[in-house]
Structures are given as C-alpha cells and as structure tokens.
Amino acid sequence: MGKHIDFGFRLPVSGPLATPASLRRVAARGEELGFDTLWVHDYIIWTTQLDRTHISCSSWEVIEAAGEDAPPLFLESLTNLSFVAALTTRARIGVAVLCLPFRNPIVAAKQIANVDVLSEGRLVLGVGVGAQKSTHNVDFEVLGIPRKDKYIRTKEYLRVMQEL
Image (cartoon, rainbow, N blue to C red):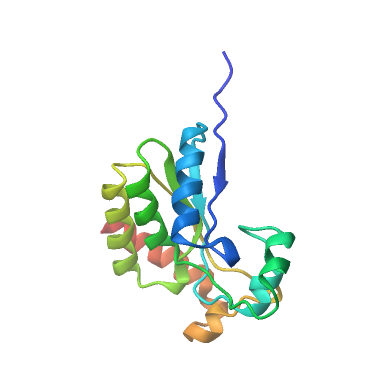
C-alpha cells in the first residue's frame, strides 16, 4: 500500500486578500474540501516592494486591482495560526517557515507551545534562518540583527527552545 500524500495550501495573510473575513472563509473552505494542512508564512517587516513583487497569497490580478496606493499588508504568522486554530477542527496548521533569528527564543517557545495547545496538537512548525538580502528582505536591518550571525543564532535558539 502506498504512502498517503498530504495536501495543503497557503492562507491569505499578505496583500489585498489578507482580511479576517478572507481568513475565515478560506480556512473553513480548505477544511471542508479535505485539505490536510493550512499554512501561513512569516515576515516581520513587509514593504511596498515586497507587497508588489512577492505573490504569496494573492494573484497579479488582485494586486493590480488594489492599485498602486494600496498599503503593504502582512499579518503576523503566530497570531494568524491562533486565529485559524479557533476556526478549524481537523486540518493541521503550520508556518512555512518561522524566521527564528528575528524572535526571542523564550517568547517564541511560549507562543508556539500555546498555539499547539489551542489547536489541540495540530501545529506544524517549519523553522528558517530568514531570507537573503537579494530578496529585498529588510527584517535583519530594521530589527538590528546581524545577518552574518543568522545560522549560529538559529541553532542556539532551537537548542534553547527545545530545552524549554
């Protein structure tokens, strides 16, 4: 017998579709259709340039319809998952991926554990080191975190979080 292949999709957490109503509708419909996992992605700093070029949760048509003056919008990943946990009962919920070097590991561990409890064990956590500067990501610079330390910082934060 073959392995089960899970299917999931990314929720609308950035751009013009990032609204509570959209999250409610899309999460409920995804679960109703039998998707296994509902995903969010993670940025702290979301610029106009990222909003216009990073088609993560939308389409060119939606972005163009919103117009040039639409403010950049990106909903925070862990609070999104808490919201989605309350809207769903079966589908796993996940972050693809949580940029760990941007967060205090003690606070992040508490938040992650809390989302897992609120979702009754349905949390899937992907962890990353943050995007390269060439992708127009400015989180490191705005948060005052040295990019050169991101691998060491991530490894240490994971160790701390697992210990907690």
